[in-house]
Image (tube, rainbow, N blue to C red):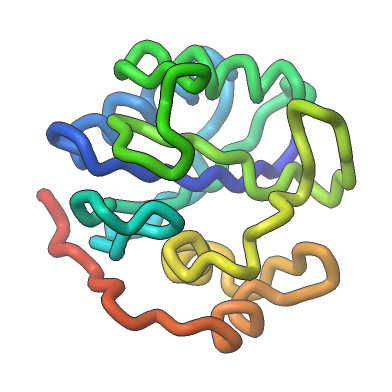
Length: 163
């Protein structure tokens, strides 16, 4: 079984309800066990800043799927919740964005998948929820909590639990 870290994001519709359903779909379709789930965080938009704030979270799952099979599952789940990657504005509004951050210690560079995620340590909106569930995980030689300490977390706010 592989330990996989996945980042979730969205800013269209009831994102928190979407996360709950999407996580269930990921676990079902990937025959995965949910190991950890972060809180949800309100975060300022990144890249294309002329849009609503995002909600971000991270999960850790265990799965026996290989990275490409898991990527296929994640893209199917995004589509189920209205995401069409080929028509989407880069860094634009979206119902659901799922990014594989790390798959065990696998290092991979393919046109459709780079592991670990190449921009992880530039993105506080991923590092904040990731540090909540995996502060001591080492990715690309950097401990998650140390990576978080090197970026600004301005504007990121933990949301209350939905109950």
